[in-house]
Length: 359
Image 1 (cartoon, rainbow, N blue to C red):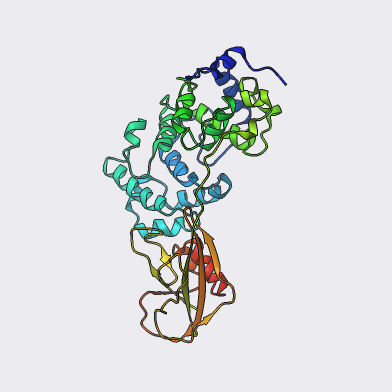
Image 2 (cartoon, rainbow, N blue to C red; image 1 turned 120 degrees about the horizontal axis):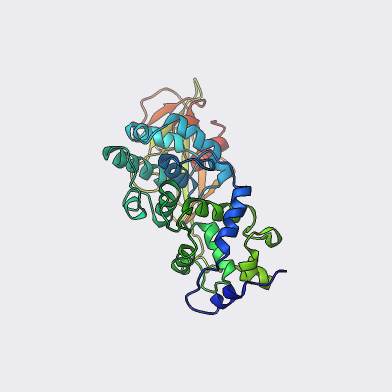
């Protein structure tokens, strides 16, 4: 294996590592040959569209590129500009977002679009200005500023963290190490190609510097990587132990109209988990199993198997009660099964409906 660059080796031994001179040019040269073609990414030599960059970055938070690709194209067809997105009702945006998860992103997306549209439809062109908008944190602000506006700022996502932590064999665990990794990345950002640099780190992490089995023999910056030289790149980045995820319990009541198979749904409150989304009626979710009161009297029958779903901070176990009912004025909305996928039903409730045979 090639030896680590001497200046980079020295940098690893001091509290404030400095960038190795050849790292960035080597990474950009590799990117020019291997860059991914993605529906939101400008081709080489083209100017990136801030709206597309912003939309893709919000969609990609906690979601894979494979999942986002097709959904991005569909979302863009329905809301082709920030003005179109701002003018749409929130319910329409939530419906189009259904299945992508982390639904607060959709609410913030809509709020951000309205704020941008109110200011003439132009996004701020600095990371500081972008970070003031709803739903845009430090990483997203840096990514948009670098990719869409050519600002020389670091965009430190999970890929960048992994690459830099391995290069420096950083013993400080995440998330505590985030400020250090941001500083290390910022030191490497070139003034002339900050957007390409941000995207090159993303592509390197997704195709070469893989989380569990890094392909060091194919890495364009292996000679500057302490982890590659030591043969322990896969050990990094170190992560602090996560607290155990608690389990919550609840009940979902699936009412199916006997004459046409329509399903009763209702809209959740606008704030809180899954705010503004459509749901199957049910009680509160608590850490102790308890009998829930049905929304109305019917011949409810409990399914043998509960439905389980994992959120970021807890695991949910839902008992599912199903009833065939007649026509009546219910507290909610009746939806034909063919239309349920288009009204914004989160994944957890789609699981419930599938278990009940309602979709």
